[in-house]
View 1 (spheres, one colour):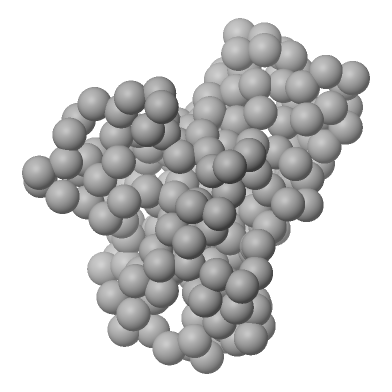
View 2: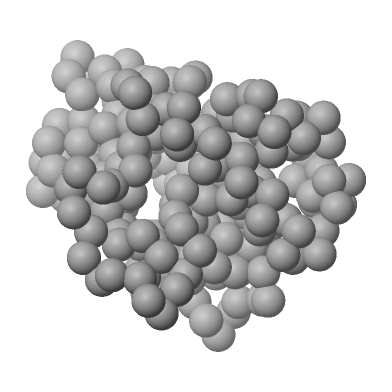
Length: 199
């Protein structure tokens, strides 16, 4: 995928901008997230390809959603239209899962939409749990089936199913089938529970 070098550079710049904008040092973010200072430094220099699990820890430590790491800085001049060919694509180097940011880049909105393709047999685990902000998420299965474990609850989701949740517990996505699964994730941060560190 020829998008990967561009998105890696974007992630490096976006992470550094969010961290410095929050007045946080590398050591401070490392302490808050459990990700080593050296790893964060490598990511910010574009010298490491972080996994989805690492990015989720960093996003939680910065008080933003994982999707916002792939987004542009908000601007009132941003277009509300997101063309298919302009949507950023990223592939997790560990699981091979692919995510496409559907929402208009930089357009101010409390909702973020992401399309995900989870390969057959893939597993993606986010063990972040409690976050500085309250994030609501819904997952709508377009094709295939996944098994999702949220804390102690496990759900098997098939085509057309939609699951609502708050991101305040560890979550594991599994594709136990022989075919890829495709789904849309909708995220919204609760402004009543936000801090100064959210998107």
